[in-house]
Image (cartoon, rainbow, N blue to C red):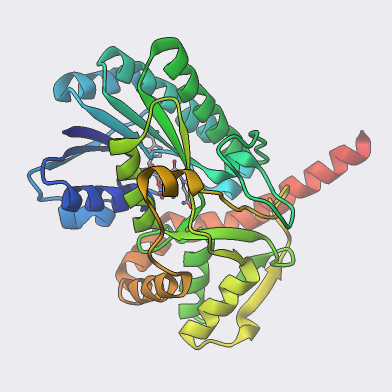
Length: 350
Ligand SMILES: NC(=O)c1ccc[n+]([C@@H]2O[C@H](COP(=O)([O-])OP(=O)(O)OC[C@H]3O[C@@H](n4cnc5c(N)ncnc54)[C@H](O)[C@@H]3O)[C@@H](O)[C@H]2O)c1
């Protein structure tokens, strides 16, 4: 089976590449990744020499380049992880999100249609469902209600995929997973920010009151579900993936500080993100029932393994922090405050 994996130099895509090569001896992978700030060849260096693996630097929104890659490889399946993924970045500038997440997905669908691939898996997110109150869970038929430019772009891509199933009979399906954590996650997302800052005894920023709830899944468990989607999923369907491990951000930070033996005084509350979704919770009874998939790693074990990975990969962190990361992060807080001030004054004018 020859599979195009897009975004395989990112956090979850690289987990899937490693997992698939180990789990299926007949799988050949072409990993197409643009290597944006979030893509890193070091994430996949352990498989770089595998004869069943090939890396191509490329853009999913570039039809000409995509056509060449599809023409050369004649893929059986496509798994689309490639995306702009950080909500805060989408608040500052939504343009790359529209380009990669919507237009890039559409370009991939066109080539999948032209070359008659047998399966197309769109990796989506529970964020497309919006925000929950203190009870209930998202089901696959929960109406889409995205609240950030990131989640809106992912919802648009999901709808495009499902439209291509109906209109062009592309055999595509969508998975929607909850928040992932684990090794190789870019240190702008919550858990690696907390771990890497704690390692340096720097403040641990927590948005608002810290009571936002996320359902945390270890990335390799997500990869296991994606392989099941590839092998057992039905075109036109949506499959939720979750762990059941719901935690407030405060619970997460307390657990990290406990495991790392660091003081709670490092916690620093910062101004909340606009339209910050309060709670996500995933009902994944469909994949438990149809694929007998269930999570195997509890949150505390996964978190301890993640902390250990960051502790033993300080060179990986240093390389990232020495390049784009720090200047971006500093900028982000300044620019976000400016954006918020702008929003407030234009509301007053209204
Ligand atoms: N991280 C999560 O908690 C989570 C949860 C559910 C779903 N998802 C989804 O899983 C997928 C992967 O997320 P992640 O956290 O690994 O993201 P990531 O930001 O770590 O990686 C994204 C990868 O996509 C690549 N990329 C970006 N634009 C591209 C383009 N135009 N062409 C080709 N490659 C491009 C980047 O270089 C990077 O390697 C995304 O689609 C995301 O929406 C993520």
